[in-house]
Image 1 (spheres, rainbow, N blue to C red):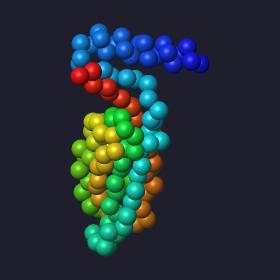
Image 2 (image 1 turned 60 degrees about the vertical axis):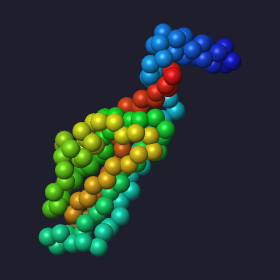
Image 3 (image 1 turned 120 degrees about the horizontal axis):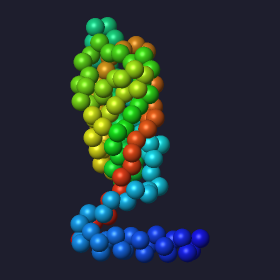
Length: 133
């Protein structure tokens, strides 16, 4: 096991030298889509007779994540949801047009429907970077 860790450290050091001080992308990380948290809170607003729900999606990892998708079976809303924030494709919704959500950052949107929808993370790509400077 110690030999494997030592090999990884040598590889990272070598890549840091090869990149000449540029940012180094590490494709191995302890984060996953399971580090995406989804919180929903009912606001006090009613829109067309439906309660409004404020949703916050948070990346609870120090690495950034891209191509975050949520299960959103049957999702609908009488309140407009900006497609650049949440884009429904069948029973899957793409968050933030697939763009990065930085580590420990959040993105929020609201929708109006009754009952609320269970929005669960189903996939993402985790990218960790180390600055060589």
